[in-house]
Image (tube, rainbow, N blue to C red; front, side, top):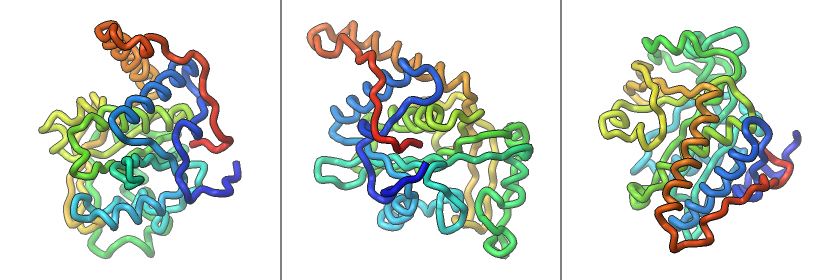
Length: 274
């Protein structure tokens, strides 16, 4: 579908459409999660032009490492219909958090093969790959992941917004938006060991991970990443867990009657979608 204005972000509540998955559950989840973010003091926007991500990353290098080339439109081919960016704005309109996803159609190949050949990083690895750049992949699941894959990443929170609860929503919303927009077989991400050491993986709702994706002399001199994944059935279950937890918390907050009923109608936004 043609997008006439992919550059500027649009309010999430006006953008989302529930195409695949359990529509009523996903619709309720999005509406409730968006409201929860608003109550935290931020508003969620969506863009389909990842050049915005590159600009925001460059402007926040004091708190954010350089981007993996897999999310840089200058390095890889990226159609607006196969990529989206979430960004949270504070009351001033400043971006305080980001996360992105892009759809990979691996066909009969595997994630390991695509990374071994640097096709995940570059449209033309022979010309774009750095002379000493290398990747070592020991995560067994990388050889099993194939088909339609949503790769999520670009997760960043401005330092003054860390620890305020948005990390419990953003990764889950990103995975669900990719799930309902693209119907991928698997949603994956790469995380550093520190996320495991500090129990951040629990906040991101990522129960499964394997070491290692070891990258050297690339966008960063040295980085060791764990591969995380959630398959299609896991994504639907994750939404159900969130709604059940939300319902439980509502029962304990009986003095707020307006939260007792969730919208039952799936909100339809503009024709643009992930």
